[in-house]
Image (tube, rainbow, N blue to C red):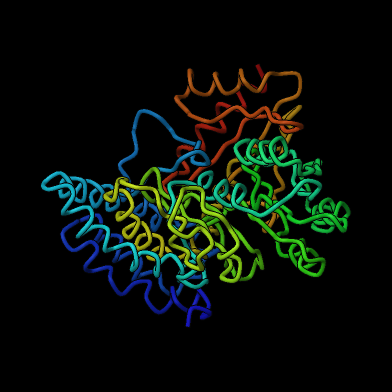
Length: 428
């Protein structure tokens, strides 16, 4: 049954296909050997093993001339995903309509099943999309809301989602009720009550960003959802940065709707994502694109996108394989370790401002810092011009700084260079 825990699923299937996955690649065989040799080591200890993560790093083709620490935007895919996409692309061009519609498109149902298992939901609740924005806007524009209905959301949400809700406000007369978080925070009651205290008899939807992309703050979705459910409020979760980043299941969140990108933390090809709609909500949610019966009870009504790059979609399979091979517990532990590794070396510098909570469970890979009396845009420029380190400057509502986001392929040498650059800028 789909309600089996995701952890059990990963343990059951995680390493079974390694020999097939990497049969002809030396780096793959080395990685398989490293996994075999580290099976008995717990995730927290393994997170600090540079010998082990060296083999993971060899799975990527990232540039040696730029240190990419903006994985919060788009993450690179491991080599096996790139190779699959290129192979499917070549196939599509041999006889496009035949290979796309009669061969590659037939892989959507097995892919739907695998994504559902990873998310711990039913395959009949997963629709494939191109990114989180498309998935979430399909939901936002598809909800049956009328003038006067209230939606609770935050000023720290992603602009595409905010703009979608503002469009509904403009066209339909719904009322947007705004949370304004003071971040960072390690107080789940404070974070949850920011939403709960705004619920009224007219609240129909609460929109929650699972992990705020600007600074990496993780919000207590389940705590908010439990109260919302008791009051008949639907729960929409923006999981653009959470899925395959840290360990959770959509079922445990108790949300009604969820949207994510897969080209971030799953490492799938650029332009992939999915939406989740609780089974009993599918019928009443209108699709974004026209279908024969917009009120039918079939998750596939949300996939009426016409011709699209099937070669990109089908390469998601290999990203799932790679993700399962590492394991979410190992991945989360490593990402937390990398964030803490660099930030602990700069947090006591004069005038440093840490915009991200460091405690486990409140953040993972993403962190944001600033330096008092210095422009964070200048730090962004300095790091790239002097050290060829790519980060991103953030100015959004009350969050200002540079966002730094390593991934599993990031080395400690990369982060040592980052620390050197921050120290030099801060003390100059």
